[in-house]
Image (cartoon, rainbow, N blue to C red; front, side):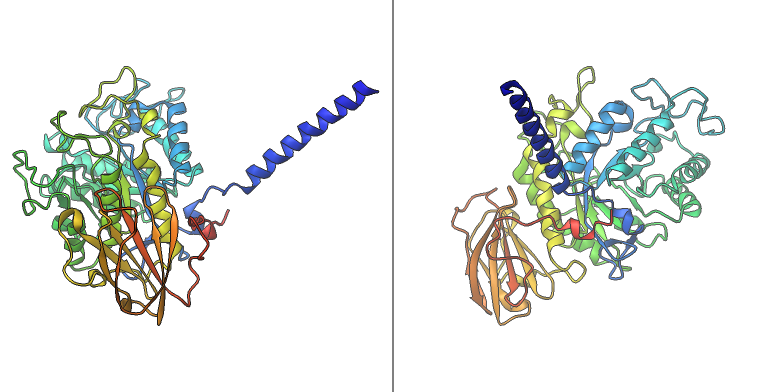
Length: 491
């Protein structure tokens, strides 16, 4: 009898454990599938992206440039699953980095050149079958794939003609126009005035055969697509590459397009894009990468770190970008054993997934989705008096009844609380490095000086949040923000 009772007790404990596990799984947030709310479109203001039913889309991207060539199916599954868990909803890839291009399975992208008639061979897991697998796997995980159709280098070398671009564009559009999770990238780290007929032929051909997906142009470092293509009908939103230079670091660039000593001010590209007509949304599609040398090519230079990653992200978004793309030196090139690394990278891509900058990006996305989304505008008049330069610059944004001010050095700053509605304002401090929220109190409707008491230093960044006291977007007792994405989840 004692033995029988012991077996029953163990069985009960097992069932309780299973029940607890099932309950924990049940309480986990469901994967958010953006296109369950309709296809991705530009909102009426011309500043943001949204799903067709009105759900906001905050683009949080990763640069997985060489995933198609270097990762196998199992690695693709693991990488995209990790991206989804970390809050990313976009992964930017190169369909072809070089010409010719080959993948980890030994399959060529263009076995017959730009002739795709017999590209799918029975019994062969070809290059484009692997791209199909990437797209389908990302779809299951709620991730868009930003397809850079051609990297700029082979086009610049004359390896792609205008006719080739038309044939290739037709092939891509026909193959992927019915997949819900595609965004087209024309260009690839190249100026728009280099082989413009090729880029226009590619873009116009895809657009003529695919009305379902948005399109942009990925430009050279320290440039924006707005310079060349803002008027183009095929360009739905602008993209800039703020690049990897630090202040004053020119390194002999022959195509330098910005004022010297503004290299890290990625907010300037947002302002430049918004000054053009027609107004189109904009995003930093390639800022500094985590753990890459400043300036790229000299591996003795300091590495960009998580502090820099956050600063670029918050500066750009608070200046008006509709989202942000993160990057890591090892992940963008999918560095692993047997594959040579560039730019001094030695860490395998799967270890780089643990690095702090990548895991802090989700806090920005959640912060922006917490408040009314489409009435938000950049507003530097929120910062009273003279703003700082370089790392001392505070970037501010607001809606009708809330404001946010990003302060990279946590210096004392005067904030004009009259810029939003309400006779009284409730104020919080938000920590971008860990998502912690701290209530600071209620304040009168006037210019007020604020400083968070953890100290003044570069990288001790904070966001000041002020809200009309009559609104309840945030509760006073919250120590972090709940998942704001789930209220839009349709599945």
